[in-house]
Length: 304
Image 1 (cartoon, rainbow, N blue to C red):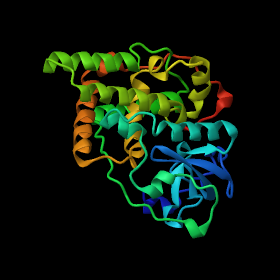
Image 2 (image 1 turned 90 degrees about the vertical axis):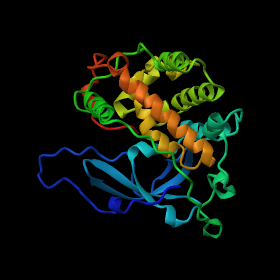
Image 3 (image 1 turned 30 degrees about the horizontal axis):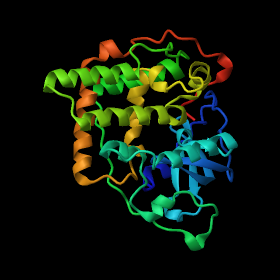
């Protein structure tokens, strides 16, 4: 688990003007929740709530872990403690050992090296078994400024203009990954096994992460309407949501046991792939969202 950010400890509540509408927090103090940390979901409890920087922030304690891991998080890191989300938690646990055929896919699925981290969720908040977890190397994903603006526009379309991406997207994520493979094959004269596994890993992460942490609140109903049964999100969504994944990847890979040489290789692959997105921005990304307008009673908010 990552360390608590000190700058999150202050309060920037913006209620003084009297004209600012503040939505109610999704979670309450003392509520038991499920919390994302890295690529796992842990049982946690909300200790404190504050409204600052135009959003609710929650101080959470991970049950069974030392209070040194208490941290302030946004609602995008939290889930309600219900049967559906518990099943999601178990699915992520089961997926960790599902595929060890390559370095990147191993990184996407395998358990962390530390036995303390590998145990993951504790069933009880027992101080006698609390442990401090060693920090892991994290991958850095550098996003060009023009794609950062794309992310900002994406947020504004959904949260300010109340517009959604029209689904299904073309090209979708699978199409983009295929185009990248073709591009690398033409450029390098071949497609290496490592590149193939890298692209499989991206697809796997996207399909797993999209419903859990890549959607804004206003997009969830559209997801349930558009992705049914065994349909993979990577065949429905496009570059707009794929780019969100690269923002989350450092967090997702925080506690994956990645060897030094693999880490260097992965960072280079991420860099080249993002350059490819940048180069093809006009063809991959929408300049405006013309999908269904969000009903007014849905309110505003980020991913939940």
